[in-house]
Length: 301
Image 1: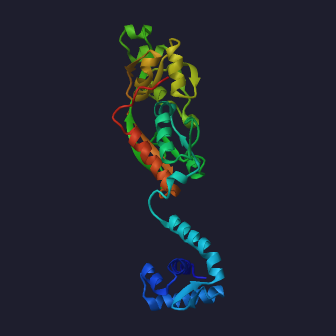
Image 2: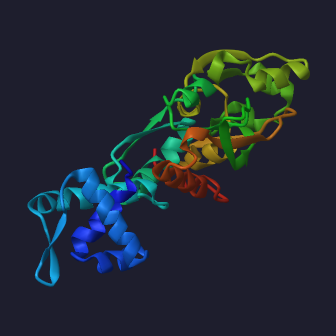
Image 3: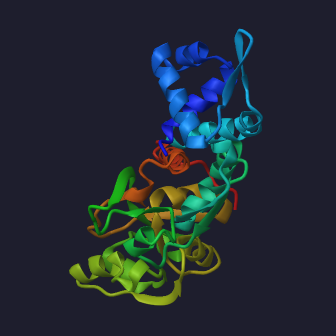
């Protein structure tokens, strides 16, 4: 069965005329007449029969008219470029990201998603665990984080560069003196558990300067670290833009780290299987536009 016959059958039933269907399909009348003969052979039905000077559909053709039209429309929708009808998308998008992204942009992104895809949902998951396998296994749709392991099947686009700063509560005793690497290391610290339990870059930078800090508390996210710093004399570190977005509400102060510390490149990553998916493509472009801005808005905390 040649499925192209369905489009011709849809045109024949809509036009009730071989010549009309030919114009609709942009073929010659003899070619459409030949196609009608093939349809009759395939279905075992005349489809259109003469009634005086015109053609009328058979009973079976009348019964199948609506089904044929719907099938042709669905096939066209499957093959059509563009958004593919995003208002009908019903799925949950899983995004692994630092909690700063969810805190500052979560509600904004949710509003934009609901406007474009009212039946879709958004779920952020912590970035403290996991690897590229989660993208390959479709356990997550998008991953926001530092540029790390690269692979041919993982697509990435840059979002922003970020530096890490020190963070303490307002009126912290350390702020009254110059902050050297030695002074920084001498404080009690709160640290964030790294993804994959890799060595913390702060500890690596301190070791290169000949120092070692005492981590009194380890928490799962930068926001938890900042909350701990706001309520104690613990010293935290956090991405500069996220720290700046919450330092007012949490009454925090930031300071440059007295260490040689490289600027991180944060990227948006996804598996190549989603390259052409309209809904996925819209979401990642929306995230890129939001997070690539020159500055982050102040978060409500």
